[in-house]
Length: 185
Image 1 (cartoon, helix red, strand yellow):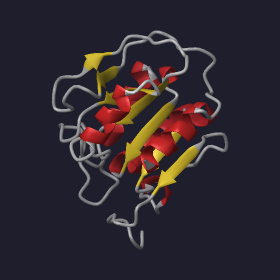
Image 2 (spheres, one colour):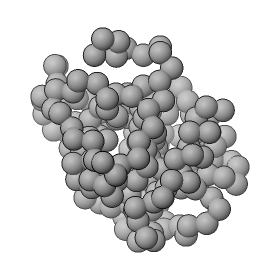
Image 3 (cartoon, rainbow, N blue to C red):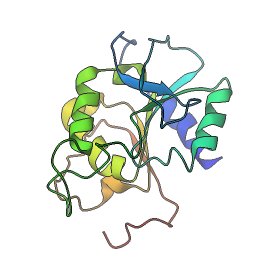
């Protein structure tokens, strides 16, 4: 219920994009297993159904998979998943402690932005490391045109090794349950 309410509120926020533009993007349906290959999304029209894009690394696509699948079953949301948790790029970049060179979450974020597709979403959903690395990269790239976002665990608000300027017009909701590993950070 809290996630559904948060997504409903964020999806109703004014979208910075006038209309969806067709473009290729690494998206797969939330009803498919996140471990399967990435599929190309087809453009969708805006309407009563809100397009929600989950950025898989850190978003708990396995642990929360049932919840994300339920969101996708109803008429309110069309849920797509960018990327896969546990893939070769699902690791911190070099400026993080124990970070690694490419591929990593920053190179993944760059690919997500360059391939396009974000203009087709009404709301982005990040969790943990996606909020720490991918969302700040999206902010640097799109600025105020970043779609509204929900960040589970609020990783984007912590002291990050590479500071990210939170765009003034980027509507972002931090959803924190208090059972995360970011205490004191």
